[in-house]
Length: 62
Image (cartoon, rainbow, N blue to C red; front, side, top):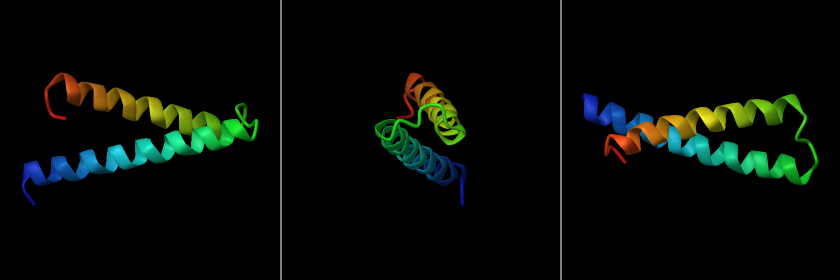
């Protein structure tokens, strides 16, 4: 696998994980579990992925 393929695979994984975390956060919110450890971990992960995607966007990689 070359660098471009590796990057594309990584980007796909980040996008998929970001969407999953976002959906789980909404599900936990609807259950009133905003103070749970799981919610906080998902939120932390989502913010990390959001930051990574914004960097890629800034460099015209999205």
